[in-house]
Amino acid sequence: AFARREEVRVAAIGGGPGAEFAACCLVASIAASSSVPSHPQAAAVPAVICKILDNEPAWGPCIDLVNERLGGVAGHATLELCDLTASVDRAENAKLLAAVAEAQIITLCFVIHENTSALVVGEADDQRLGGAVPGVLKNAQP
Image (cartoon, rainbow, N blue to C red; front, side, top):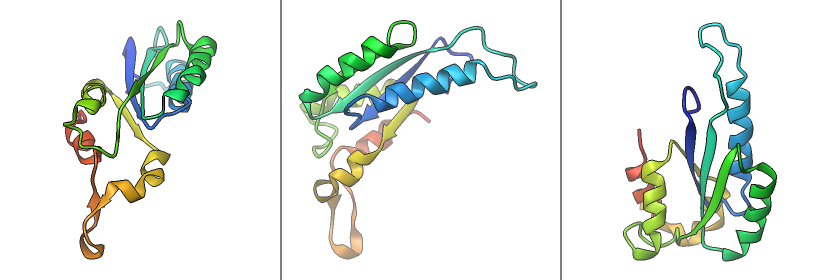
């Protein structure tokens, strides 16, 4: 996802404090300095453009601090509010759907475990993920 790109777009679903942005900035810098013989060294580190998709607006100040420390040349992170427990087609998930459609990297970390009771649908013998998750996976780029 990082090779020969000026920027890498990340959709960090349930990304709360911005750890995915920090991790992608680190990976981008390591990838750019790679000395693999079959791949020429990249001239520049791609900017990481990270949309943090969460339902908790209180993460905003934390993301601002992460941007202050890592943003600028490395890229930037923005907080977009969404509701992973609702269908991806709902109005509150319009920014979620847009971020997934343009992302090269999508993360779905602890948020799945954290919201299991709201995301698992069906009977015990036919359980599956509900909410926005099926739509996120369907709209992700190959």
